[in-house]
Image (cartoon, rainbow, N blue to C red):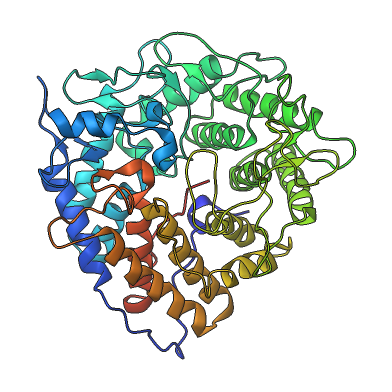
Amino acid sequence: MLHLKRITLTLLLTPALVIAAPKHDYLAVVRAYADAMIEHARDHYGSESSSLFAVTLDRQTMSLPEAEVLEKLAALPRKAWGIRPHDRMLSGANPMHDENLYQVLYALSDLTGEPRYAAEADAALKWFFDHAQSPATGLMAWGEHIGWDFRTERTIKKNAGNTHEFYRPWVLWDRTYKLAPDAAARFARGLWDHQIKDHQTGDFSRHADWSRHGPHGQNQYPRHGGFYIATWARAYKQTRDPVFLQAIDVLMGFYERHRSTQTGAIPAEIGNPRSKGKLLWPQSTVSLAIDLWDAADGMPDDVARRMHDMARGIDRVYTALPHELEPDGRGFVTQSHVDTLKAVDVRNKDHHPFAHLWADGYGESTDAKIANMLILRDAQVKDAGYRPLILAAADRYMTTEPRTDYPIYPAALGDVTELMLSAYQLTGDQRYMDRAVHFADRSIDMFFDDTCALPRASTMHDHYEAITRADTLVMSLLKLWVKQHRPEAQVRLIWNDR
């Protein structure tokens, strides 16, 4: 059984490695980003200052956007760049949106011997868990929709601003329990009490009210179920409270009961008339498998067996899907029918059921992003048929370059750099290392400039905004630098965009 920290690709270097010559000093870029965030992105607004980091900044003033700049940013429509307006945080913090910033800060302390980086991350997370937790539900002011406003000292007032939903898995629970153990445990209990609608059947929605009891149903996305199970498993290990075992049992039972009798696939949602229980989001189920496998460590034997069995079933379904990873193929299947496993949009009828090479955004994925998730699962099991898919996806990026006719996010380059580095580690093939360096250098040229240490939000938008996952790009640059210069370092940098 693997601990979460062991899912991280171990950064080891073979003696025969010939270092590809980079154009840029990746560590210098990462440190400049971290130093700029520490100096300029902190909360010095409103009636109370805090150590929180802003997730949106004007790169010219290095402050929260204001006046005409704010008005222009707030008016950006989804169709202009793929981000829904109500998912954005323009006036404060959201630690899930820049979660990898914290990973980078902790890693920088390990690599440089300077404790200040970790201390700054600790200060921000402790303040957040001490002050931004709902007294009514225990849920945190973070995730897909909620942020903490620096000027009003409360949740950001906006559409969906009271809706709790995970944005990513939270991979910093170990640190969180050291900094704020009571708040972390309250959050885990709040997920059970206020996110799960039916404690008998396990029906829930990824959406729940933050400020009051208000769970919903019919949107039981497997990736979110995995996030909850991971949270409860960590809370159980910390507290030994049996309520967390109950929560895990109920939610696993929900997924077990609703698997397709034809294929064993887990539907994306049950009881929702828009999909009638027939929609499969394959990458959502693999994310669940990752969390199940990791959570099994430390569970009672019968619970661990159920977790492993469900995860293995997900592996069988995913590797049976008709992915098209040839150079001219359509990519990974992202939508399917649970009973046939055909690539089809069950719910909306007209959505492209495959991933993209470069285009990212709400409800979309790139092949590199999906492959990086499969790498996590491959590291857990190594025999589930994922490796050929991973390498085929990597090969699709050996000759292609980012397009310039629509906005490209920092994350798109970060994900590809991460994939190429991982493909090198899996094979030892120097071509992948060279390609990782190529994309890392391109990303710096595309998103950074001499006027600001923070990357642009996209190739067509000059401000800084964490929702386009600049933190993922910066973390990939640091991983690449470690691979090239400090291969002996055991650095905990977990890819978490799933």
